[in-house]
Image (cartoon, rainbow, N blue to C red; front, side, top):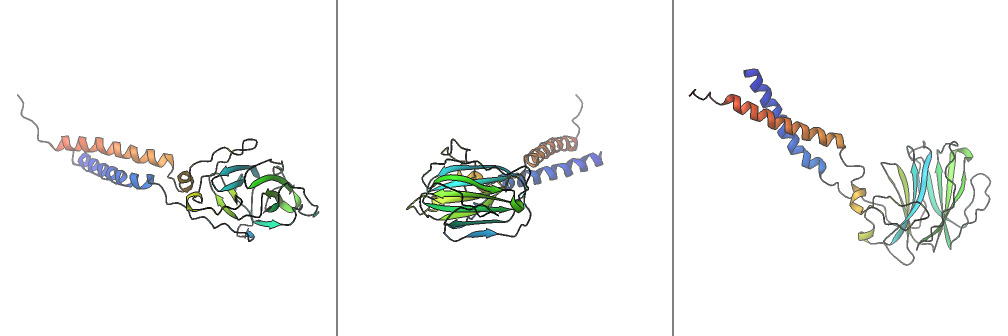
Length: 244
């Protein structure tokens, strides 16, 4: 009998701890800090590896347009820069791209099979005019040319679940403000519907921080078990009522 009471008390304690932890785990994560828009080249060589490219797409946002490369696994090294002309890796051949200014996105560590998507996306957005595949397969690289309305600022960052490299192109004569530089959880729609609205900013900030669904269910289950155990223990501690 005493053992049952002890176990009931222990389970109740665990359940109370779960109830306390649950609101903390479910609370929205703080918004991620994104890099500023600029015109200088951006590169990251910290991850020499890479993975196959699952998809490329574009989307429109308030004050900027978005180009997204989605990976099957990790993001490898990359280099993003304004160029006079978009060229193919290896051959150096000029790749025609519509626009007044051009951004080249070069990715390393890309397997030759399956080949990275190389389609042309007629974006037709305010800042981003066209995206053209500029070659894939040469020495584990893939490259994309972005034709823009003018040489506006851009920013580069990565997102997770799934893994993505994001390039935001500012709209002409627009300096993105705090209201439109918050981390939007990227879910830009593939061409030919590139202007579809993206997911609201708060969802992206939570994207890599949200607790797993199974953990929430586990904590809720422990809480329920604790409640039942507490009731059982309380009833067992009550003095026996006299027989009538």
